[in-house]
Length: 453
Image 1 (cartoon, rainbow, N blue to C red):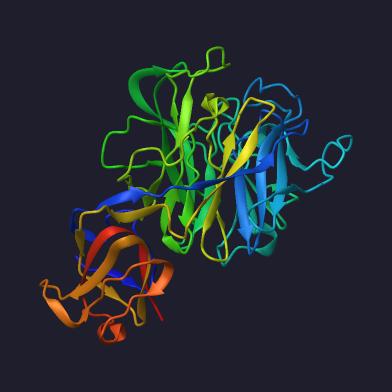
Image 2 (tube, rainbow, N blue to C red):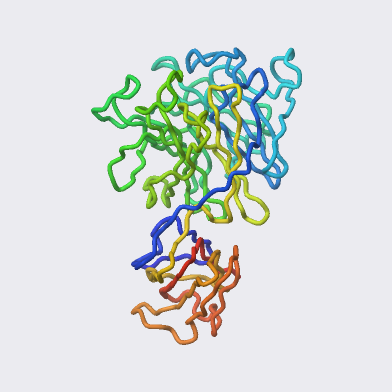
């Protein structure tokens, strides 16, 4: 089974490259908190902000989120007092509200751009489809529906991301459970639109009046109008956890992979007695190469609720859908904290480039051999980190597992996002020829590899 990677970046988020390994494991990265990015202290925000979306364009990005004009917690998902708000950032670190002036003129400098029940789960994205008309380059899905006649997601479009038009009052995605953050985007690799929604996996266990487990499924479309029937996410094992949201995006710089950062919900636990609703949550990480089969080598939490007791109420820890990529390749992500409280805020986390997961070795040496693979012309670069006594060593083998003369690399050490890993002979001399990589690690993390011209 030959893996064709050409000049594509391959992060170690799954075992797609790995035929066998010994003494190594895939390990989750550790995002670093940079504190508050935005405090939701406006009268139309406090305690109700959730289901956030981020759209980056160059260094700038727009942040969308749900608010509530009533200042009370939502009476139902169809509450007409719900609003969609927008803020902006020029650096991915701090945000400021955009005074839109579209709704509620009595609320000075408000940043409301949509009002009504579709604001409950309004989920915008930038359409990367090269055939997309300019006036529809921003799209969104939203809605839930009171009954079977109105049930489903409606489509919105905009040319600037601020002023939105409803494409049709008729829902176009109608099969599923839509009372969550249902996210859509254009998958350039597959050449189609995808939309990921929540549904209920039938099970004998009751939860909040339902019988089952909250899960994720998806539909797809060639034209953003006609959608397929839902396909449930497959994990290779029986799902026992509730996934409340999904926050799925193409992997930054490796868009042939999709990543998901769901809020994982435990509806049976209650950390704070007297809280309005039961449940505690965290955020997890998973990835997919075809949009339907998902890899979860690390099932533990990616981001925990932490020491702040107010994060242990229900429905905090919802990850913003969308990542901010900095010029050095590091990635910012944003998670909703203190839901239901006036102190509701957005926490900023950051990881190194490709820092979601790594191929990891502790103090003892370990090694890995890839499937046969082919690559394009260029030089091998590695994103890796070692300790002072650690190393990364890469050797090229032929398909039979024999060392290829001139391609036994040195013991590299240090910390680099994309340093050239040199061999005695030029790598381009064997471009297109099936080879295996033997990777040896000690006290090291290898995040990704790429052959670059």
